[in-house]
Picture 1 (tube, rainbow, N blue to C red):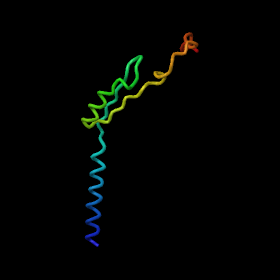
Picture 2 (picture 1 turned 30 degrees about the vertical axis):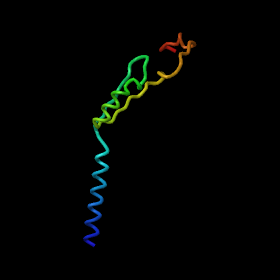
Picture 3 (picture 1 turned 60 degrees about the vertical axis):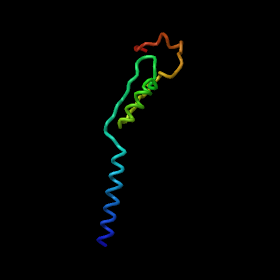
Length: 78
C-alpha cells in the first residue's frame, strides 16, 4: 500500500509540474491606435509569445465595420 501511495504521489507531482510549466503570469496587452485593428501587432505577438509571454491584441468595437454616413450627425447628446 505504501508503494502505491508513493507512486501516485510521484505521478501527481509530475502532472502538476507539467501543468504549471505551460502557464505563465507574464502578460502583454497590445493596444492599437485609430484606424487600425489588433492585427497590426502580429509580429510583436509572435516575438513575445516565443519569449514566454501570454499576448493579446484586441480589436476595439466598431473598428472592423464599414462607414455608415447616416451617423455623421450623431453626437454624444443623442
